[in-house]
Length: 129
Image (cartoon, rainbow, N blue to C red; front, side, top):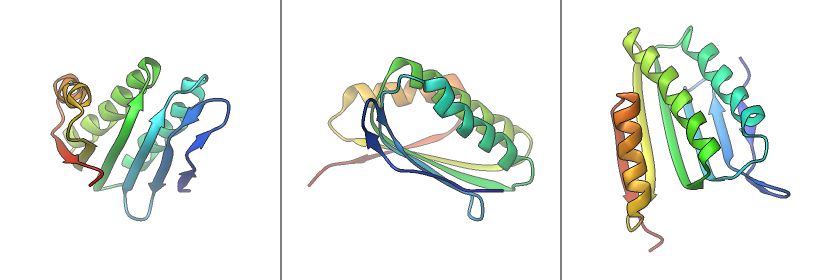
């Protein structure tokens, strides 16, 4: 299984950095996500997760998104749903979501994802200091 490595870009639209590593099960999405073709971008990530969990025992999923648009939000929930099913099937899932400690909106969004996905998501506040 191939890894996915995508550099953050701010060309015609904003895409997050992605680092999905099959050998470690560590998956990171970082930066901002404001895409025109959200479906095209995130379908690859969802498909990778679905393939990965077929033969995996554990996965660590890390989000550190400063901003994401509404269409990205739908895809985040799809990825979390794949992880929840993996957990229900006996896999070990660790989800960390880093957010700026003064970003109350993001904190509320994460809580909504916890409720919507029924996954334990560790909320990790940080600051630029």
